[in-house]
Length: 254
Image (cartoon, rainbow, N blue to C red; front, side):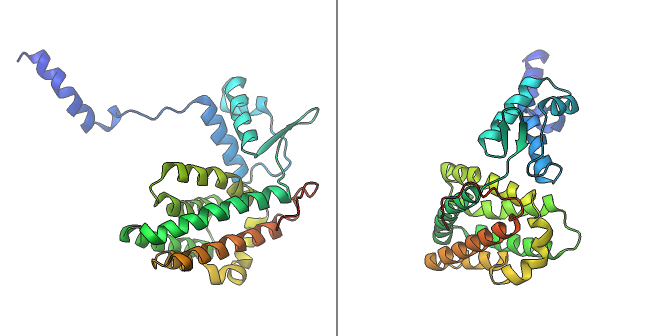
């Protein structure tokens, strides 16, 4: 074996040992623009009804207009932005129908996920869910928790249940439904009042209690606990989105 051959054969091992040589996941300019605008909405930097300029975003991110336009199209498709002639692009104000419709789908998916979790989750998955539930309740009681940090942890807690099914398609459907819900919660006055009312409204359905119910291998109990949790969330979000909701569209569902 010559020295050149030995060097070539060692390269894969060297790459594995050197973190700086590991491949970096590709992130397109459109993905960067999308993440930037979404973060501004979720952090409260952009509120319901605020105008959002493609040119301003492109200038701030130091990129051309096409990737920003692509990001805006994605956000419009997801129901978070809307473009109106002679007005421009705004952060979309959800209607009562929007909120109730998404919660109907959320309830169906999460109740099914709860049933599957109760029936088939591993011991480790059950323990991790309970630990996460306790941590989430602790975060909500903390006077210094940041809105984005809490909501991120909240979203991760709920996603543990469908992910335990092992079905990529099921998990993807769930996550697609959740994005507008968490965004609406995040950029509304809901967050300001949530902690003041959480003990009164959610004490009987804390995330630790929900995790314990899902972990008892009782399918009926798991589904009932999740249904109550989701329905309580719907009541709460409608109450705190009241100043913002577009009531021009409503199909009467409750």
